[in-house]
Image (tube, rainbow, N blue to C red):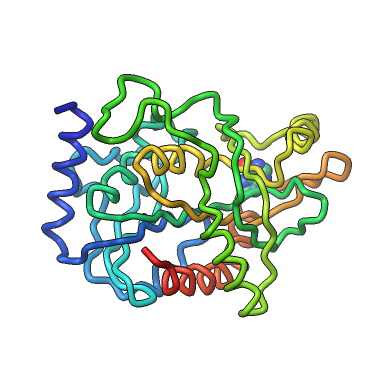
Length: 275
Ligand code: HPA
């Protein structure tokens, strides 16, 4: 057995000691999007620090916690406090919680993030369902020996975001009267934000939103055979010709404004997911 599989096994075993919940859906809560955690009827909250092999918190970050509970009539596991590559974690570390959630039984993963809007039709405060992504991180969590028990050496990426789930999100949003944009998410390593020239280039590449996360977790989710549904909270407008300075406080404030709509859509999608 590979070292990675052993580590996943022992982390999953330790989480199981805290709760009998058998999650079918995993949810990653993005920056400023933690409000969804309050909607989960939680059975257990486990600090990342208490789980073997979970990446240790750096001085500057709060490592976060796993929440096991019920949402929309289903058993779920939420990862509150995502790890980012720019904090110094390897992409294998960033994606380890997804591996553990899979070992605990999830069959679908819902991911969320705060992102800059590149599509000129998008405004800060919009919510977008992710239809596809561009990996611009210059790295990949699957680099290294492949464990065939975890997934294939060359995972197919023709539909990383389940079309069925995108359609479900769009139909839920329509019924609820919530405006939902759709588009391609591009992931950069960060932590510096991007220049005007880079935004122009990314738009030219076909991206609608840009951020510093999500893609590693989605690659590992696809490798693990999970269905993925993703959302970006558009927190600022990355218009190369009319760019205004942003800071993390502003980004979090706008994400917090979007969060109730995201929570409403995610809860309804979880309820209706046939998984
Ligand atoms: N880039 C630009 N704007 C953003 C980002 C980013 O990575 N994340 C949230 N808003």
